Image 1 (cartoon, rainbow, N blue to C red):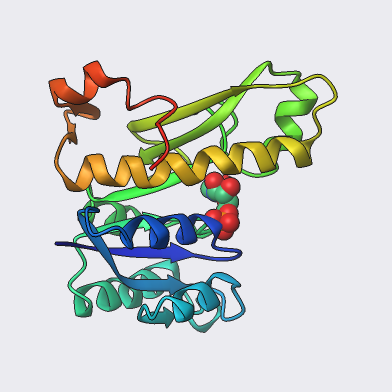
Image 2: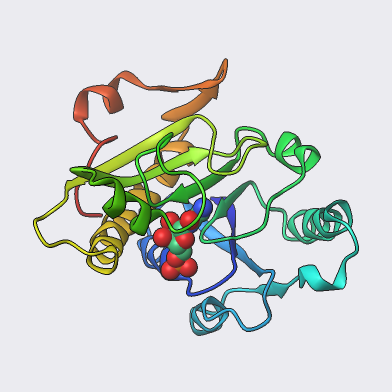
Length: 215
Ligand code: GAR
């Protein structure tokens, strides 16, 4: 059984979707550790409720990103983690950390990357008048919200849609997409190869990569 660490900074609804997915005995991974860089992150209560080990590594306690990432690495090593999932984790990781975890470090972002990286994504999409929106799970590279895409899920923007309604509807997709992508990676049905993600033939022909079915 593969061991995951989920890194959060806030609400933790994507953490919850991974906790729920991992509760299924058929899911190929367990969450061995939840790390938050904010002591008051709501997601910590979700980890506690699920009986998952948690660690608060407050970025304010560290002078440099390197020191913070060293503490993070140590926590991951102690928990013998195989894969790391960023789930609303709002810290930029050092190139060294990203390199150490290459092919085993995932992020979820509420846009169809490479469009709309960064913050205030839903407002920016509404302001731009996009007609199709969605979310992406990708391997992390040293640039924020960038890196080889594992899976995306899309929706059409409705008349009268606001940033709030869009965020809510995309979040529903996120909660299906992340566990589906984690499963693909952990089962080695999708993997990083030469800077892109390659899939087993079974995955490519099932349509599971885009708009994944209910878990
Ligand atoms: C999610 O919408 C996630 O995609 C986004 O933060 C939110 C966290 O919500 N991540 C990013 O914007 C990364 N750049 P959650 O704490 O409820 O999972």
